[in-house]
Structures are given as structure tokens and as C-alpha cells.
Length: 239
Length: 174
Image (cartoon, rainbow over all chains, first blue to last red; front, side, top):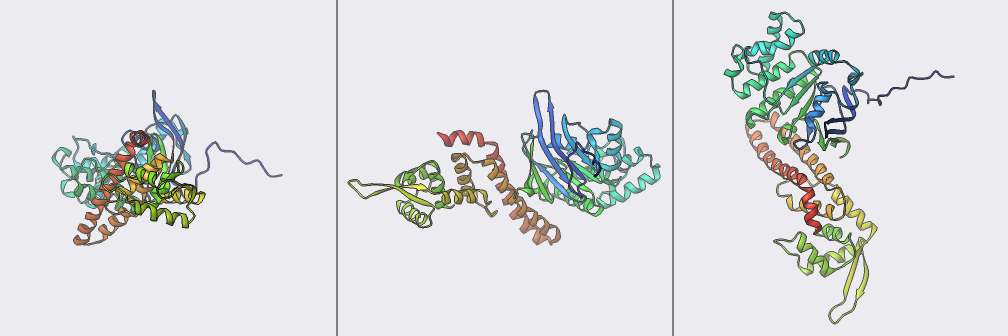
């Protein structure tokens, strides 16, 4: 007689998937933000999350990144169930495995650019000199090493966003979450940021979850999912 | 725009005479370019020959015979296929896309689905151009940018139409 295999409450995730979500539901009071959304991404893949304002794109990103806990559903990262982890566990995961870029860089205004980029490493316990050396390498890659000693208030929007991208990559994350990363930039700067972000991510085999409503930005992705009324649609599996 | 598919789509709600079809077409889609009766006649002959419509009845009157056409199962499948197939992304697609969306609403199909499929097709084109731009020289970049801006304009129209589908559904039902 064969032994009884364990039955998991989590539906199986296709092999090679780094981050996957199933049937996510989230409501804020009477407002439904996610209504059965699904998502999956492989290492080195750039997936655009598109949809109109208020469709649930950002809530989906926040759930995937472990910032917000869904009311129900499953999120699996590298074989681990995110919804079963406590706050400290998710926090540690975010610091070590995930990187973040937001619409407005959200750099710490009191720190210089190189200190800002080094910050995630410092929070993980890396000594200052070592952290700043790594930070400088990323500033060079993002073509903004010349502003390393300046504070965020002294650099342009495009430069600040490149510094933010450098900060998101400095810990060698497996997943970068980018929420409208070029939303505050003109098209030339926006495109350069997208080129540098996707080149850097591909070269390190990091996956990028790219929330955007701009088609020209989404064109830097490998595929897109569309979120509408809290439901997601994976266009690769439809067309 | 495919007049044949549009007339077929209009027939889905029930059999009509050629003249009714022309009137329905002009009212919904022919704002600045009404259909000639000759076009209706030749299109219906072709559809009849291809088995996509059948003659549902003939009324004899004082004037010429009036044929009433009905869509066949093959005709419905043909409309379904046409609506589900995205258009090749190119400038000035709007009249075809508009027709597809209105017909989908008229025949209780999922119009948002058509817009999503088309968005995906446009993005596929934009990815190819973006990739070419990244690898190319300045001339390539400028040429690709021109095409990208046109596709982006189409996409903005798709998004706006998606946001207005409920209103459009009410308007076409009138």
C-alpha cells in the first residue's frame, strides 16, 4: 500500500515559478480591492501589471511584496507561503530578497545619494565602508555616480529615480517591485530609467513586477497582466 | 473595416431585408460614409454563396423582390472569429475597432475582451519596436519612436473606450 501523501492547502505552483499568487482577495471596508486575482513570475522575467486607476494594481503589488496581507488566497515565494509568515518574517524577506522602486524615489532627504543606496545593506548589518563601496558600483551602473555626495534635494528627478533604482538593486534582490517607476519623469528620462532597470535586472536574473498604466513603459516587459475590478487577466495565456 | 462581417453581426439579432441592413449599418457605423445599396447587394450575394447567410423569405411586392436574410451557424462562427482576432496594429484602426466593440455589445458578447486582446497585440508590436530601439542607432530610435507614439495613441483610445463601455452599451441599445 502506498503511503498517504501530504495534502497541501496551497495549489501547486508550476515549476520554475519564483513568485505566484492564487485567488487573492482583499477588501478595505466596503471597497473590494482584489477579487480573486492571480499572478506568477519567473526569475529574470519582467511582468507589467496594467489596468485603470483604482483597479487593484497597487494592492496586488503590495500583497505580492508582503507589505499588505490579503484577506484570503495564497502567495508562494520560492516555495514558501507568504501568508503563513509573521510580520518579522515578511520584513526580513523584504529586506534581503526584494527591492522596491516607487513613483517618487522616496529617498531619505538627510542622507547623501551614496548613503541612500547603501542604506538597505546597512540595515542588513553590512559595515559602512563595504556598503558604500557596493552602493558606488550601482551608482556607476545607473550612470549617476557624479551625484554620490549630493543630497536628494540637490539632484534632478531623473537622477533621483536612478539613485532609487540603484538602491533597489544593491542587496541583489530576487524580485524588484516597481510601482509607476517613471510616473514623475519626462519620456526621455523615463525610458533611460526603464532601460537601466530592466538591463540590470536581467543581468542579475532578478524578476521585476512593474506596475504601470503607460504602454511605453509596459513595452519594456516580457508580458503583461491586466487588472480590472480586482480581477487579473494573464494576456500571455489568453492570446 | 470588413463590411461583410459588420452586416453579418447585424444579422445576429434577427433576420432582416437588405434595405433594413443598410439602414442599421448607416445608423450605427456609417456616420460620414453611408453604404451604397449596391454594396449591400454584392456583399449579401457573397455571404450567401459562402453559406454564411441564407434566404429566410422572399416578399413579392409592387417593385423588385425583397429577400430577407438570416445568419447561419457558419456565419455566427465567422463573426465570432473576426471579433476574437486582434487587428494588426497600425495607425487609424479606430473605425474597425469601434465597429467590433459596438457589434460585441449588440450581440451580448464581451466587448472588454476584444479591447484586452487588442491591447495585448499592440503591446506585442511595441515590445518589438522598443527592442529594436534599444539595439539601434539614433536613426532607428527616432523611426521606432514615431511608430511607438502612434501605437500608444491607439492604446489610449482602447483604455478610454474600456472605461466607457457601460455608457456605450446604453447608447447602442437605444
